[in-house]
Amino acid sequence: MSGGYGSREVTIVGAGLAGLTAALNLARDGKEVRVLEKYDRPGGIPLAHPAVDVTPMDPGPLGKFIGVELAEPYVWKCREFTTYAYGRKIPMDADASNTYCVERGHRKTALDYHLYELCIEAGVTFEFGMPFVSQGDFASLPIDSIVATGLYFEAFEAFNIPYQKVFGYLGKGRSSRDYPCCAAWFHDYTLDYAYYGACNGAVFCLYFAREPVNVDEFDRFCSEQLLGQEGMECQRWDYYEGLVATGAYNTPRLFAGDKILAGTVSGMMDPFALFGVHGSLASGKIAAMAHSDKAEAFRLFKLFNRYYNRSLTVRRVFDATPVAVRKALLGPALAYVQSHIDRLAESMNNLNKSIPGYRQLPQG
Ligand SMILES: Cc1cc2nc3c(=O)[nH]c(=O)nc-3n(C[C@H](O)[C@H](O)[C@H](O)COP(=O)(O)OP(=O)(O)OC[C@H]3O[C@@H](n4cnc5c(N)ncnc54)[C@H](O)[C@@H]3O)c2cc1C
Image (cartoon, rainbow, N blue to C red; front, side, top):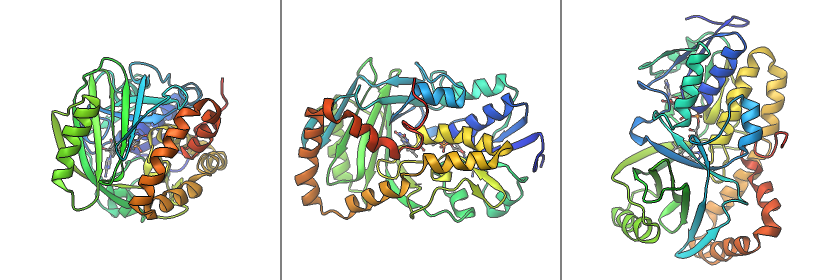
């Protein structure tokens, strides 16, 4: 396989947000970049597409950092953001919370596809249908190859990166609203939360369930909550088993042996709310930098992930809190935030700093 330390040729595994951002930046720096992808198209899990990820985001500064304009139709500011905490409806201030909807997948309006087109223009080559399965597959990559394989088991196992399993359902369909919006539900049945995001006519829903999945609860969620409270319906649902990079403290790592990690496989995600979009985009740029300046790349990596342990502690406390206590506290807490958003907006943005790179890049 081509490439290696100091070589002009670079190999990247994974054509998702982080891998494509790394590829684009390296190609613009004059490298010969080859991306190897498991599926037959960019953007990961084809059955989930078109997906709509929801995330707090700094599109201006982040776009400048990665060299890509993060704008419509790929990235939309959310116009409506509603939270339901144990049956209580709490409309949130979408503007103050900087919440965005990002279309994922292979449609022309998806961010992955946009990055892919920019990569093609910059001369990156792609090989699809190339799954890396074993430790040996990853070991056979040249030195300084970038592994950007997202929240899939293979690389986590091969590099011995701690993770936690998650279970649930992925739903997709046509949005009943013609503007970007999202909602999140905190309830007994969710491990974390259930949510949907909608933009560009598509709606995407993720229902995290405790194991074993209670099908009656899930049916109730679809009919009474998703449809009844928000008027949204998914035409297709698929069972999902996956992982998140929250298996241990100090999970984030830029290097694994002689390889560079990028995106969620590097642990660059928010361990509390599990937002991964912001960190993966920033991480693609950092992985590209690591080719020419490892020290500077590592400095930025540590800086962007410095709230990881704090946020993981909050998550562990939340997980250990009995449902009755959550019920008693979460609704009033969210309602308080919503009604005092003017005063609390800055503190909310500080909380969001556990999202790697958020509010850590020069603003304006
Ligand atoms: C169902 C789901 C919903 C999510 N929703 C949100 C959300 O709403 N907001 C948010 O901020 N984050 C969300 N996330 C986190 C999300 O993973 C990140 O936002 C983002 O996709 C991470 O980018 P990435 O580049 O690390 O991984 P990905 O974008 O997933 O890209 C990884 C790429 O590597 C390829 N690949 C994987 N394994 C291999 C292999 N062994 N060999 C070759 N290629 C491989 C994949 O096919 C994929 O193309 C969600 C994650 C999942 C799984």
